[in-house]
Image (cartoon, protein in one colour):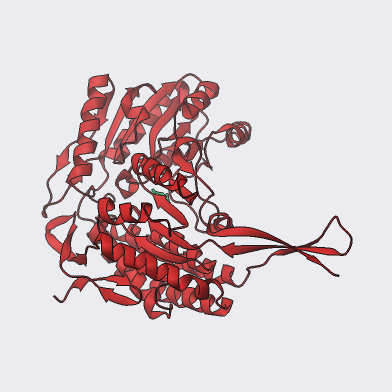
Length: 479
Ligand code: UN1
C-alpha cells in the first residue's frame, strides 16, 4: 500500500496493515495509513535500543551534533508541509501548525548546540593528592510516550535531548496523530542515526505503552498526557527504580486585576483559553477577575469570543480549528452541560457547529458567575471552555488561583509592579505569566509544573539534562 507508514525497529521499516489517521476538520479525509505495533514488535524495539546503547552513549559529540543539526534544518526547510500535515491530523489552524513545526526545528537546533557543550566539573578533593571529576552520563533506553495535542513539538522536545545526551529511544506517539512523529523519525533516520538508536512503535497505549511500562530494560520514561495514565507510568516504574518524568494536567488560572489594560486582558485570555481549541495542558480555563473591571472585561471578552472564526483548520482566516475527535468532543459537551447544571451562566457558545466539511467543530464556550468549587473549575476539560470567577481583590484572586490540585502555568494581567512581583513569588505553579498567555512557551527554557501537574525534572533547555543524564562522581588518587 502506497501511503502505509511503517514502524522503525532496529533500523528497518516494518509492520503490516495500517490504521487510518483521520482529519478532524474533514472526517472523510484519511491523512494516511499508519502501522500499529504489537507487543512483540515493541519488545524487539526495546531490545534493539538496548543493543545500540553502548556504542551510542560513547559516540563522538560531532556525530550527535550532526544528526540533530541536519534534522533541525530539514524540519525548518519543510515547515509548511509538516505544519499542514499537523493541521490535517490534529486540527490546529495552519499558522499554528507551521508555528509548531518551526518550534520542533528550533528544539533540534538547540540540542545540536548542547551536544557540543557537554561538560563536567573538576574539583579538588578534601583529601590531599586526590582529584574529583563530576560528569553526566546517558541513562540508557528511554521510553518516550507523547500526547496528541502537540504532535511535533512534544516528540521533538523529548527525542532531541534523549539523543543529545547519548540515550537510545523507544518512541510511542499518540495513536490518534502518528503522522508528524513518523515524519520526524524518518528525518532523523535519514540524517544518519545508527540502527536501533531510535525506534518508532506506533499503536495503542494498552499494547505498546503497556509493553514499555512492563520492560525492565527501559531505564527511564518521559510521558506527557493525562493524569490517570501518568499515575500508571509512575506505578509501573517504581518496581524497576526507573527514572520518570511526567507532564500531566492543568487547570491554569489567569487573574485579571482592576488595573489591567482591557485590550491586553481580552487578548491574553482569548489566546490562553481558546487558541489551539483549548487543547493544551497550559490552556487557561479559570479566569479570575476582580470586581472593579469584571463587567467591562466580561462584555469585551464575550464580544471577542462570539466573533472567533471556527472552522476547517486548513482554511485561511480560521482562528479555532476543530476538536480532535468524537471522544474529546463528548467530554467538552458534557462539561458544558455540567457547568450549566452547577449554576454557572453560559454567556457565549458551547454548541456544535456545521461547516462545509464534516468535522468536530465547537463554538468556544464562556461561562460567567462560576465558583472555584464547581467541577468545571476543578477538573481539566481540555477543550475550548473557560469560566469567569468574580473575586473581591488581589488577595482573593491569588488564593483562588492557587486553590487547585494542579500547578502548571499561572497568569496575571496587571499594570501593577507590586502585584506582578508578589504573584511571581506566590503563584503555586511551575510557570508564571505576567501579561502574556499561560500557553505558548519558549523552546530554550525549562518547561514544567508542580503539584498534580508534573513529576520529575523539568523538560527543555539545559535543564533537560537533569532527566536525560545521570551524574557520576569519580575520585582519582595521584599516587
Ligand atoms: C505550550 O503551551 O506552548 O501538552 C506548550 C501540553 C504541554 C505543552 C504546552 N505539554 O499542552
